[in-house]
Amino acid sequence: MIKIRLPNGFSKEIEEILGDNTPVFIEALENGTARPGLRVNTLKISVADFLQISPWPLEQIPWCQEGFYYPQEARPAKHHYYHAGLYYLQEPSAMAPVAILDPKPGDRVLDLCAAPGGKSLQIAARLQGKGFLVTNDLYPDRLKALTRNIEQSGVGNATILNETPQRLAKNFADFFDKILVDAPCSGEGMFRKDGRAVLGWEEYPPIFCHRRQIGILEEASRLLKPGGYLVYSTCTFNRQENEEVIKEFLNNNQDYEGVILEPFANLVNGEVPYSLRLWPHRLEGEGHFVAKLHRKGSSEPKENIGSGSASFPEILKEFWQENIKLPTDNYTYTAYGDHCFLVPRELPSLDGLKVSRPGLFLGEFKTKRFEPSQALIMALTKEQIQNTISFERGDREISIYLRGQTFPVEGKSGWVGVFMDRFPLGWGKVSNGVLKNHYPKAWRLI
Image (cartoon, rainbow, N blue to C red; front, side, top):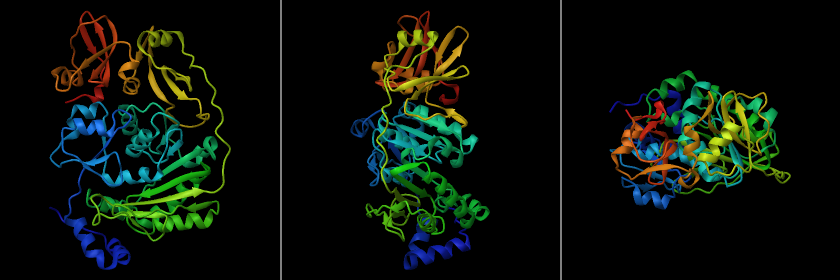
C-alpha cells in the first residue's frame, strides 16, 4: 500500500479540529480501506424485493434506507441487474446529503452541481415519479455521464441543464421546494480513495474553494421558495469550506436559518448544530460534511397545473397508439430538432437556458418513421408496452442482447420491449423472425 502524502496545512487543520483523535483519523486515512456501496433504485424495485434476488450478501448502510455495503470481491457493474438499472454504485457517505434533504413525492427539487448524478438518482427515487427534478451541472463534459445515469435508472420526470446558478435565477427564482448544493470542494474526503486528490488540493486550496462556494450558495438561495429547505454538502474536512461557509452565508442572509440535526449512526455534529460530519475513523465511509438550511416564511400553494394529454405529431401518435400504454396527463410535448420529449407541465419556461434534456427523451424522428429512445423504455413498466419479449435471469439471450447481437424470436414484426423478468433492458425490432438489436452501442457489454 502506497502511503498518502498529506499536505502540511491539511494535517494542521485536522489537529485543530480533532485534537487527541487525530492519530486514529490519520491511521484510517493512510491504512484504512473504504467499503464499496450500492443504492437500490426504488423506481424499479423495492428494497425488500431486491434483497430477495441480490447475488451478494448485503449489509445496511445506517444513514440510507436504500443503501448497502457489498463485498469487495463482487463486481456489480458487470451484472445484468446493473444494466436493468436496479441499483446505482455510490460511495456510502455520499448517500447522506439526500437522506438529510428528505425529498418527498410531489416536491420540486434542484440538484445544482449534479454530475455524475448519484445524488440526483437518489432524489428521483424519493420522488417516485411525482413532482420533478431539475438536475444541473456547469461543465458540459460531465453531462454525458449524468444523462446516461438518469436514463438507465428510468427517471421520467427530470430536466437536465448545463447552466450557472446565476442564469438559473432568471427562470427559477423562488421556485424550488428543496435544493441540494453538493459544492465543488478541495476533496480532502477523497484522499484515501484517490491519491491524485492531494494534487488537486494543492492547486485549488480551501481558500479558493471557499470563495467559490459562497458564490454558489448565494445564487442557489435565490432559487428556493420561502418555506423551502436547502442542503449544502462537501466531501472535504476543513472548516473553511464547511462551517465557515454556512456561518458567513447565514450572517449575510437573515431570511435563512439553520435546521438542527441530531447525531445518528456515528454521524456527529460539526461546530454548528445544523451540520453533520462523516469521519472515516468513526464510520465505514469517506469524509463528508452536510448542513441543512430553511428559508423563513411561506409561499403560495402550487398552481393548478391543468390537465389533458400531451398533443403529439401524427407520426409519434401512431407509434404511441401501437406500442405504448402510458398516460401523458400532467405533461406537455416539445421537440428540439428531430428529438422529442415529454416535459412536466409545472416546469417554467427554459427559454435562454442551455438545455441537455428538457424532460423524458421519447426518441428521434427519422425519414418517415419514429425511433424510440432507450430513455423511454427504461422509464416504462412491462404493463405499459404493448409488445414485449421477456427472458428469465440467467437466460443466454440476455447476454446476447446486451452485447448488441441479433437472435431469432417468435412473434409479429415491429417494435418490442426486451425484458429480463419484469425489468426493461431496451428496444428491439422484429423482422422475419429475427430481433434487430437497438441496445445503445455505448452501453453494450464488452
